[in-house]
Length: 527
Image 1 (cartoon, rainbow, N blue to C red):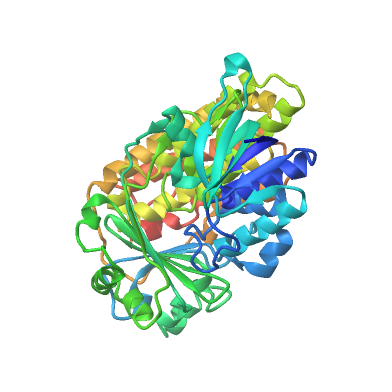
Image 2 (image 1 turned 120 degrees about the horizontal axis):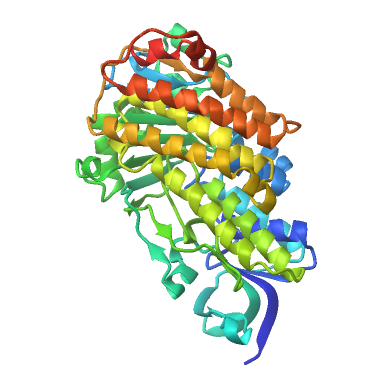
């Protein structure tokens, strides 16, 4: 049987694989690319896949790097920030403590329908010359032997009919099938343990309807827009997401550590609804009569990988390689990181460059990004119902994310070998600060505290440092070396204030320096 040759084979035609195909074609249109997907296109909207929320890096990648601005305008909802609600259930939802923004920062993020974007990407890459074969399982996968300069090969099967393909580059974007990871023995556990279940309902859930309190409604400049946030209902060891989609559906998810997961029967959607009725009754009431479209449970979802890229012509992207946690929605961020590294390696090797050092550096950078991301979850779920801890955590995590990781991606620094060397010292300093602060959060999380609800609004739009980091990201004329150095200097102060406020002996006194960085936030945190 004949074997067909391609320049690049991408195993997996979901968001990671199709995004990479589009990125490669945008950069080197002459590349001959094959995408193999086991599902059948068009994939269903509303229920195609979980992972509907994007944050700044993922949104930037999809809109700017891939050029999908018009598609996002046409088909996806602009997100009104991340919003959290705390405290034991109150009769009036306005009495729950609320953490969020009164108005939006400048950089847009989105709630995406995964089916809609994957169908659009499939059509667009085919129009650019990419071959997409769907409804196909991969029967066999053979990795190249670098000593003999061989190529990678796959065999695919549809209804007993086999086809064989080979290519210099093979990219695994097939999600938790983990084809290359399993083939090469790259699987690696990590210390973070979590469990998730989710379902979509065929109805809109609008949190703005959960209270008629006038003062509560007026907290947001654009009133009755809370429902467009990624809303989080928080408790000790768990959080519940409520995410709207543009087609009228709503995604509901419950994410838990092992202790919280043991508190209910989640074998079916009725068990999940019963748990919600006890722990988050406002949510349970809102979805009680809605049609349930799907239901999925996954245990111990977090996983790592020993290596993501190789000069031998292979790479892993998306969940085929690593997955940290759904909180903060970092999934599309790591697709952006992984695909950007892989695209650069493929394009440079296709141009005849030696990528041995480059591939190892990219692996190191990617691993550092993942380790820092994983650190914000590991051992901290016990504190997710703790208003004090989480109000500080979100400010710190945003500051690190916008001030360091997003800055590197927005300025296209991550694949610039010389520039990353220049930035090494402030990056190492930022990493140490993050480790110190995350350790303090882990210690606080052991208490599994739930503070009495007071109807507080912790308005992060009024926190000066968050405005600063957002404005630096938006202003692309600023020099990255100076911006990063300045951001890390500010992070040093934020770290000191954060650790102090986590302690039981924290003072209500706000220094002039703290006021310039955090405003009056301390008074809300310690209320």
